[in-house]
Length: 441
Image (tube, rainbow, N blue to C red; front, side, top):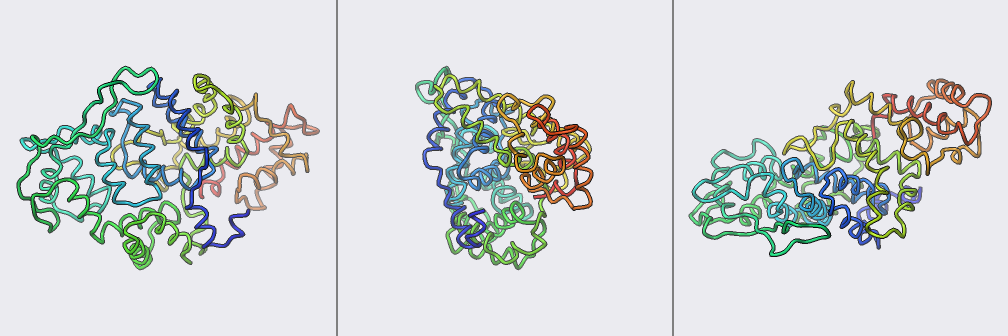
């Protein structure tokens, strides 16, 4: 892999550059047709399609991190256009400056609806956003008082949503929501939040939160656990947080510091993270080349033709939902619980059956995807098993290779053919996806 050959510093620089070229504009055009349906699953399938063929995978992986960090759910927001706009906001700031992202998400209509900020007024302050901006978005639990929350809620009074004078987007009947500040609903009295006193407004609170050293520590800790391994040492995170603060909370700087840290390359960091369903589904499809196939399926289509070609991505979205991660529908404001929570008796059944969905029974790719070409160099049962272990980057020990070979042999019979190649691949994939080793990234 060319990125590996660059070495840590240059590889990190290349990854965080996140050059999408014309891809971003193409996906934005496709999204307009999707938005006309006001279907959250279809929008999620659009996002998954983007993940499968993006030229900047780190950007999408980090956008997914922020989607869980700044969780909002379509179950409450209901307007798919608002969820799309929030998704685009998170992507725009995913590798940028943290403070503008917090301010942007605080003013985001989807978030204003989800955390009831639109009903926060001086006569009846709503504390939901004030609590979560401290507990989940910046400081972490236990680093503020209940009085800080009450005072911050007063600072955010008057933040609301308005509606444009006309509907926006193809087929839209309802005007699009936007941020609106209503001075008559704002408490302009003096407030004290975490030691800062004055006639504070919401922007003042966010600015102060981002200045506090605890925020840089909290974000460095969460991103390290997302990319490296759980429970890092305090000294490690303090060093990363220091770099983060020196850069004025530049997320690219923090990610480069993480990816160039010697600790990131120790044995402790190798395959130390439980794969979430996106890692399990989207990554395997990219490895198998399905992302390229899906891209070719939509190449040259008119906007109105795009939705029908999302069927494979919708099928994959459904699989991820069964594995415990329904994009655009995080379980609560804290986002998804990671780590061993991803692997349960129920979700393992879905992970194992992913082999059938990709290659065999119920697969939506069969008309476009044949695994036969994968095994050209060695079309034997052993060759099928070895190739899939390699392509899927599966750390299967040599002692288990015989079982994989036997499964391929039973499925393919006397020889591998175009007709039985997917069945052989599915048989091997089920065993790979069931293995304890494959549950870690």
